[in-house]
Image (cartoon, rainbow, N blue to C red; front, side, top):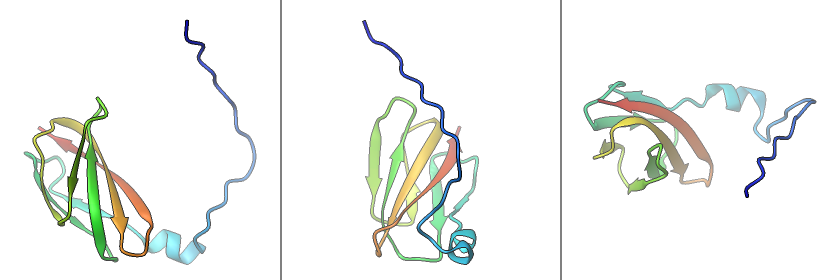
Length: 93
């Protein structure tokens, strides 16, 4: 038997990024929704991007031009050259 554990969090949330830097970092994914081919634009150089579907399956790309075989709501994790990971979502028809 598996017990589900739910923990409540209360308090302030802080980030390690300065407020100005945190607010200025946006990943742009277009077109969104997509037919499976889309581009990622970001203010930093992207080393790799992982595309993850709702089943947890992963495709990895080393380009800003993505062509995935996955469908539905997808999660993107882009790793930058300086080691930060940024996340976005895309819908593929």
